[in-house]
Length: 526
Ligand SMILES: *[C@@H]1O[C@H](CO)[C@@H](O)[C@H](O)[C@H]1NC(C)=O
Ligand SMILES: *[C@@H]1O[C@H](CO)[C@@H](O)[C@H](O)[C@H]1NC(C)=O
Image (cartoon, rainbow, N blue to C red; front, side):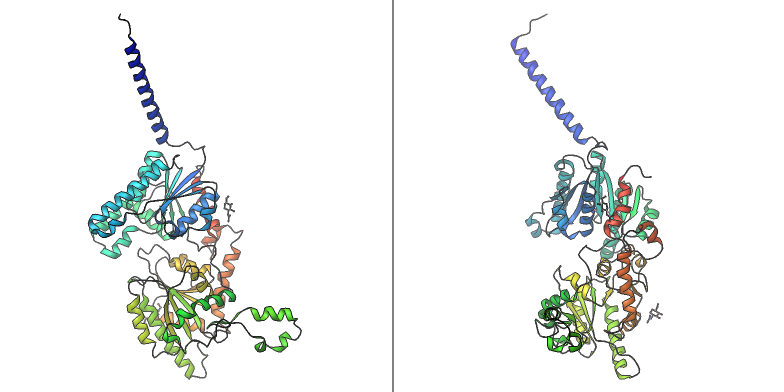
């Protein structure tokens, strides 16, 4: 037996050090990738493959998770400001993905696209696998887009043991099919991808019952399922006449830029009156009502704007000006209304129809050609004007809240999703006339919160029916509005599960989330 030399000891020491270092690293990696145990703090990663601030539904999800004591990591792109709650709530962390490099915009799409996707994949994996130190218990992802997110969260789920929840907003392949045609190979690949990686998620949320039924039957979706209808942002409400007054003061210049409107709208003089509102000067108010009034109440009386009796009916629609939104129907309906109104004016027996200002918001490819058409048409019109307006985000809910009637021309690409703009209108207690499609009934109920139409002549008739007698007596319109107001207030304290099946029910996002999503997050439920 040879005697160990000093060098041997050194070598042994170094080997031991190497060995323990390796063991430590392996152990660290092992711990890192081991599925988390269920007793530690609850956590969720919310993945948005887009501007976080422009994904209201995903922001509400994040807010709800955080309010239910989840550590909430929101991963997505920056750009617009997220809702204040996400910056206020201490459990929420916003993790912004890097924007694709500038130079990609200057090279051909075919080269740029793979680079862009690779950067996206790496940055998402980096966040989900490395930057978020403890594996989140749940990963919530929206669909579409499906590629590559569905595969990524599936992979992360396998590695870190996080449970994947897919929020089905729509079907990616059906949107793609609208652009390239149903039989295109890309549509087939996209459908396969969505089905394969979507099928086996832990839980699924759907924007409509129709979507749940369709996917469960067609793809045999596994896992827990819940329907969570969209809700408008908290601050959407019926506008006060003060808000309406301020809005039309701001809109005076863009409105008057439309030459067609001069002579159509009632005369106004800022800041005391707009085309829709006025601050009644003291000399105009009735003496009888003021005889006993003190000086102070007379002061407040003159300060508050009221809606003008000679205002036109304000009808709003928002469109993306794309081929799948039938703007032509609206144009035809307005033409028919004009004829009805002129006839009614000639016949003394018929009740008169009001002037209608149709305001269309939104930007899109077919806007200019339609606007040219309408400008030409309304040269001969007396009762109707249709203008396209671009509104600031904060003005949009006030316009909806000031309007008398909303119009939805949305027809779904998949027949499985609902128009968010109608949800917004309902939030502002604005009744709608909505173009019929397969699952519209989950939102618009004919004669309860709006009217459903199939063609232009039907829409024109609805305009006549609802607006006859405007602004003094419009019983049908008032009933619809009252129903909207009641449904929102009576929802408090009712059980959504029972109510949603029978009569029309409008729970808040929080109520709906607590009763449908929360149960999915606990093991004890089937
Ligand atoms: C429009 O729809 C109504 C109701 O479905 C129908 O009775 C009417 O014939 C349709 N009109 C036209 C012009 O297609
Ligand atoms: C939903 O649940 C959260 C957390 O338990 C609670 O703070 C909130 O008030 C609930 N909201 C409604 C509308 O029930």
